[in-house]
Length: 127
Image (cartoon, rainbow, N blue to C red; front, side):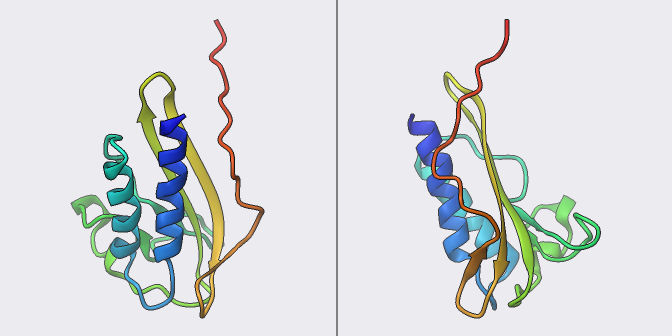
């Protein structure tokens, strides 16, 4: 249960940090520090990516300043940008726990493009 709650809290921390004028790495840092504070291992991907006609099209990445992302996490987020925000972590006793939502940046924060998932479902592995 704690793993699911930590993943959700971390996604919401990143969502709270996502607004125009921020840089991509600042948003990622909010989610990444929350998941670390919850005792889960660091996830090995960005917190989110821009959505447009071509997914992962090279616009601002909501990710850490890792070499593989180049300068994309330094991009400035603008109102009207649309992102997939996603967070996954390895949870003891669960395996991979992941949550992804699509959002649009507004002048005052974000707009959820679908109803945010409040509960994480456990899908048992088939034997």
